[in-house]
Image (cartoon, rainbow over all chains, first blue to last red; front, side):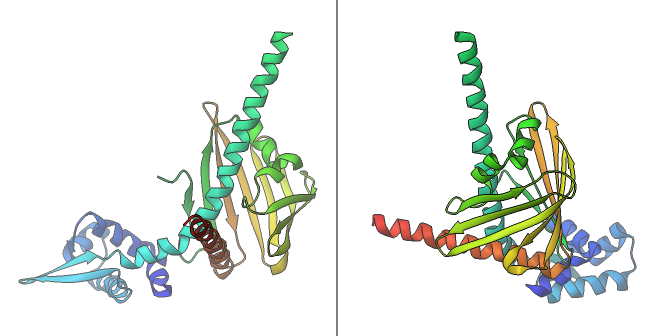
Length: 114
Length: 155
């Protein structure tokens, strides 16, 4: 998972992943969209491939770069228990706020009944 | 769909959580600074939270103690900004891991009678942040074991 994190640290690489999320791309498209040199893009793609976040599909003379979501699922699974614990806490706050507002309403009701 | 939004970008020492509550901002703010209310929601359901100190003013101290099946542990910090009902800034330290201090900022925004709470934590290092997330993992795992245990009892 550390290699996943290292690959994701760079904003350009995250941008590449965003583009690949839409559909597979050719290097040329990435060069055009990101306005970077081909060697620059290739370097980022190599890091992403090594992290398993991107795979290549050969189609005749063209190389399509595709997103692989497995490492991202791993990161998501790592975050999930923390998210769950924090959500549980907020859930309790939610219930408390609900209860306090109910009590407030009842108090007002009692006032007007008097 | 999860109600809470969690942002933890890789390689950064911060994380952000936000969630909308169906209550006016003044009330939500009160739930953060009133000891009787804090004790009712802070921390997981299965442990008891006792508010030892809660001095919501600049330089004021806060300390909460949680008692669970496997012992008790404290959390503490110092308030740096208390601006009712919109902003709280304080340090946060888990006593068993003394010295790993983070700075937490809570902002409350009014949204048509509802309140958006945003909680931003800045840790001393990326490792500290990832460690905190991983410890939530242990807590979550424990909860899962508990649930499994409950389930097994019914079988």
